[in-house]
Length: 218
Image 1 (cartoon, one colour):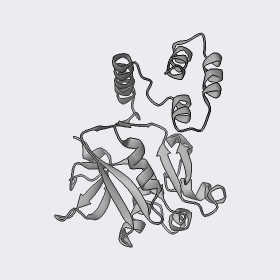
Image 2: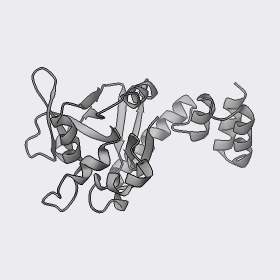
Image 3: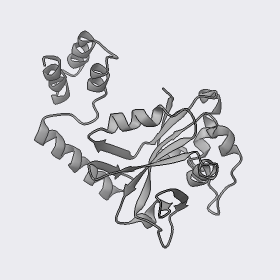
Image 4: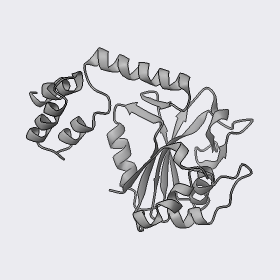
């Protein structure tokens, strides 16, 4: 499994692609997954989709999501055959409604390729320029997230409120936590039931602790 880079946008003042330059020594030639700190993903089958991207031995994988306002994002230009012709940053006339989400799986060459790109007119090392390097050599895959997925970009006050309401609705309706790291670790076999109970004890005075106790007794 590749290294995961979890980054808050304000920390990357010179563009998202700079993350790979800053993390060069840390990555040490390893592939990586980078997810933006203000992005939320939800959907049935998402773990399997991400595992398939992680299993790729070379190149890069990004995810396209249909949006009503593609001009706000990096947009995928598909050919009539469905191949990727370009990824365009905030186009005035979007070639499609598919925005590139803030989740990137790139191989170990990402720092080297990032070093070869130049700042855009707004003075940033654009992630779309890095992705274009992979696309030009034919090694970029764009997986479309369909109707069963939710992608929430919480970069504004309004979108953050929308995301909070979305997560709360799911939690209240299903009685299941969204994105619980302890539950994920337990179901994946990374921690034991005793470890889970220990974590539940840490949060015993709130709903999260009671939730962990509940799933531990399943």
